Image (cartoon, rainbow, N blue to C red; front, side, top):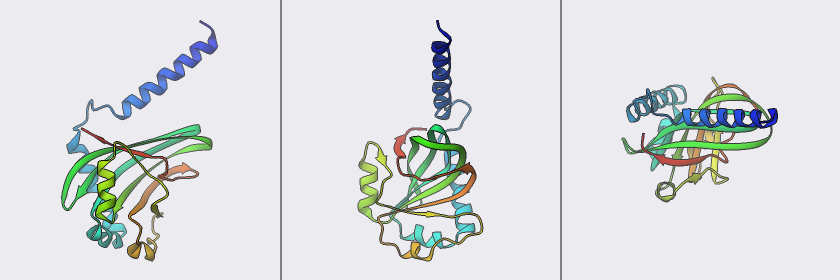
Length: 185
């Protein structure tokens, strides 16, 4: 076996095991762990960005992704798990995964919440086999200490994405290209 083939095989095995570890339920409590992280994320969001509580009250549902990790070095990927909340109840669990290629380097972690502002937007999300974040989302990025834009609370967009608690350094953070898929934790 040539060194190039061995190197390619080793990189392929490393990538496969890394992706498999992300979704691995070994050593985790599944739904209970996701629920605890979702509660902590919402508490953080409401405490640090109080205007989002009004957004949540008006939303038909919200997808809470407590921790999404993005890594990129030419090729990139992202992964996270969260829960869909309708009313006061968790109704489903989802994973977000994305892949990208291009000029990129770095890693970051962040939280985000998708607020489904209309029943139709929530219905479309729940009925899809894999919903991809696209151009119909209004994005709100917030660094620590910065208030969310005022127009966010009066937006007519069917889906509002609030991205917060970023750590790490990576240029070009966006949810576009992420695919959300229902999971059983």
